[in-house]
Image (cartoon, rainbow, N blue to C red; front, side, top):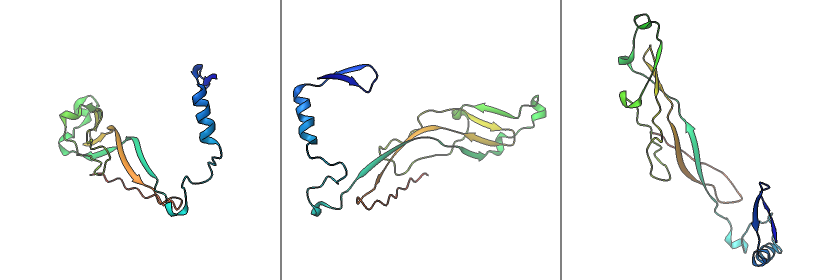
Length: 145
């Protein structure tokens, strides 16, 4: 048996064994019923891991970064490499993979008033146990320090 997978022109060949396996696996299968053998296996625990790609807006005042725009041809803000200024430690305390690094050190925007804006893109991985299923009461807490 041969056919296209996903409609994108990629051809995949299903062997007779795969075809038989699919038929056998789904014979009598009801996707509307929880996959447990009997009620003694309830409640069913469902684990979900979450990965977010975030842009965190981090703002603070740095009194050492103030200037008078008229003294600098009207410049009201500048971009500065983050290794040139003080940065707060932003850590997802209860992360799932133990990686505490910011993935990309983008520039900070400094306003003449001393306000600093830093928007470090990062991937934070956290996990949350959702069960017991079907009484789903998802409570997941991400703690940043």
